[in-house]
Length: 92
Image 1 (cartoon, rainbow, N blue to C red):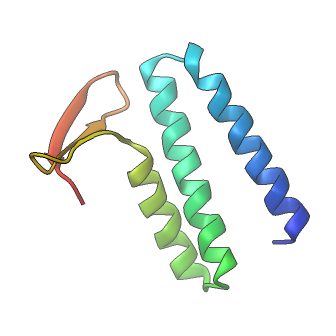
Image 2: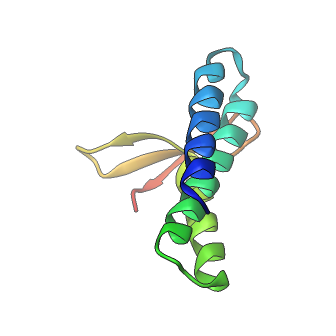
């Protein structure tokens, strides 16, 4: 990916992030998953990873994008299910 397209992708991500304040919880989850996947993919491309690692990075980014809160005192994190509900589990 060229430097210009990376800057364009970053600009688009920041624009989407700014628009999140009027979204429903399901929409915010979708945006978080999409942004996480895109970030993982961009990171893998920056390291010239092969196709398998790009897929793994995108999936990991999407999973990280669903993280909505972290309690460092208990080591528990809250994750969005995508239907407006949440669950907590051990943090990664």
